[in-house]
Length: 167
Image: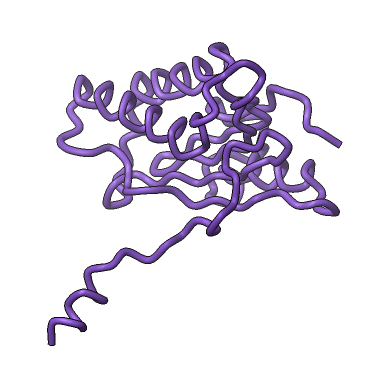
């Protein structure tokens, strides 16, 4: 019985074993969901503060931010970490996103959110050679259209393209 309990309490690993998530040569397509898939970003002020926090990571030189789309209950981003180039080598994707989630959770409390803003961890897809990064960013930007929130991606206030994609 003890062996079964030990196995059931282990968390499934969702990151690739022995992969360097600080490598800025890769583009990471990330989805971060809100806790219980609540819809806190219907609050425009909170949505703006979360985006400002994301842009701040870029301004600090911690990430290259290729595209983003903040939906009512989740965030899609395409980015590359900027570890190396004189930065802390431990500054990998999990560290950057953990800092972002912690900071934005504290911001959300001022907007009436109770407890954690985000679900634990995040979903990632590592861009590989041969994948069309532009198509993936276009897919991210079209998310509000697929959800019926706007008719054209350009009409969604919480998305955009920033840094040029590596080709």
